[in-house]
Image 1 (cartoon, protein in one colour):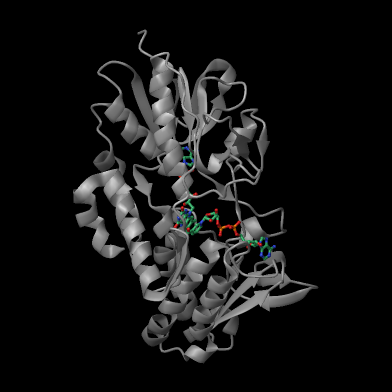
Image 2 (cartoon, helix red, strand yellow; image 1 turned 135 degrees about the vertical axis):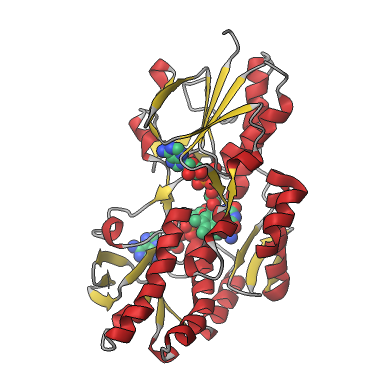
Length: 396
Ligand code: FAD
Ligand code: NAD
């Protein structure tokens, strides 16, 4: 047919927002839209630290895609993308091929290990429902193992690599979970160690120093040890090597040292920096008028020339802009440049505790925790309206 084909890769924050906006803005038979995702659910990445630590069930961090999109307007294909072929305008899936006129790439990031030996093989990462289920079960298993081999205190040592927001939010939850696990497995809590190793001279580098200090004090009170200014050099099956060769023995290393773009993008021949495409002002890959790149797969610079950090917030706003520009492209109208509107950052530190910067102000403690909840509820409302807020909101 002569109807333009739009293919959206990835149902993350960017892909879902693009799909929702397209199904609203496109007229009947104006385009064929296909959304491809590895799983038949969308995961709420910003909630994954909870199921990872076991303070919430993994199901509360995912939503079935059929409940989000209108399948009369958008074809959903549950499959894994294995190759993108811009020259042929084709996408190769594990079980088929799709051709497109317009492509949206929103496959999300991958963990960045910076080539640290053993990291990819021996550490866990907080990235998906599958990865957090594994962490949750693994942590419980260490408590059970310890009861059979009480000399193995390394079973009770938990190392978190990196004190970015992912590491800090996870530590907040883990520190809340440990007293519960100690009770459940009859373990003396003083034997359990949660150690955060951060290479930079501070936790949360770049964030407001007063709030960083507050966060570290909250977490220290819950029993967390910080090793700041200490880089992880290697990860082995027995633990990590840090600084100048010191070994920390641990059976559980969680790597939250950074994210990069997706390997498929480099393999497709796009010019990338750490797996991200430096997009133009309307979110297209340079040299490709029909390919838009969103979220963790894209790289954009603020007016001061610094890259925007990869967040759900920017991915969502890009999704809205991308849908607008797809519709404009089809209608031969002019495209709208993307302008990021920063709403701030709020990070949780466990139950009832958080820190944040929003509306030009600092927030901490209960107020910040409440703000975090409002942000999460707002997201549920944006993607699924009141029914989704009622179904999932009580868990946040
Ligand atoms: P993603 O949301 O990662 O989605 C990518 C999608 O593509 C997924 O559905 C995936 O299954 C699918 N996919 C991947 N590969 C394939 C393939 N080969 N074939 C088919 N499908 C595929 N940001 C904030 O702004 N606020 C927060 O509070 C916040 N909290 C966070 C907490 C944690 C624990 C983590 C890890 C991140 C957090 N972030 C937060 C960052 C935020 O989650 C990411 O920036 C955001 O998810 C990026 O969105 P995206 O659309 O680019 O990709
Ligand atoms: P990040 O890149 O922000 O932080 C990684 C940390 O690991 C850095 O502090 C870095 O110095 C440290 N590190 C790197 N190599 C190391 C080594 N060898 N040894 C020890 N430490 C090392 O990654 P992230 O925390 O996963 O965050 C990714 C993105 O998601 C960011 O843009 C972040 O803002 C966003 N995010 C936001 C929230 C929130 O808003 N609540 C929560 C989670 C993530």
